[in-house]
Image (cartoon, rainbow, N blue to C red; front, top):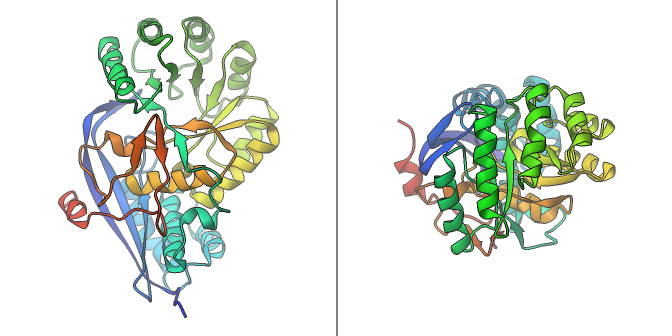
Length: 373
């Protein structure tokens, strides 16, 4: 009989270089730090999870360094000695000793799912009800670079048939300059690809009211989180004003956040990151609320590595509520491959891997090479 007892929980910080700088509204990164979480059972099965935030603590207040301390000092004692099939009870007990820290909790949640599924010899999506599709559409994020660089990169993706829709970062430049840049890009790609933007909550209400209509008129198909996360009423006002969808990201990190968005009709789409939500279990709660309210969900990313991306992929393939595509492009932004067999991207989609657990196997030589000293 399989022994599902957890004998250890270990963490490792990696710094993986990117193929190009990735720019957000307030920061830029040339490498992505990842916190690898490994949960081992008495039978020697190892499940992996990944703690990762987009560009550091500016986004959600966590970093790989804070996650490592919280997991090793406070979460590991709750986990070790339990069984990997006790995920609900384990995560409930973690809530009693650690508030918030959803990115750290997500890493542990995924590692538990991976270990349990591997122990059973089934894919993670089986634990989530089974896959109803084998691939998902993937939007490519183009950062906040100048228009000519963006257009060139977009055409390269189109020609290679890797992506057919693109998201652009805003908020780092003067709004008038930024809008002109985006409209130039949208017009250059008109008829070839969809263009959406993410302001990363950097504009105030007046700026949004002035410039968002220009983006809609300029060919942008969706606007993500233009105003601060806690200003739900402003998001609702903008949603009523604009003829294109508003997507809430920073505004939705908990089930209660999703309920508030639904109550106020503040967004047409929710950016569902399994990382910011605290893992696969809590993500299901948020999607359930969105489905009940008729709000679409987009499989968003925190620029995860292959472990986090595979986890979000299993979730998206098992959850019909993820019905507005995804941006699970993270591993394509890394200049180094961490898997023995890379995830498969083709024809604008990411394809579900076969095999037990997350269906991916780490290249431990690559992990060692990029482990932080």
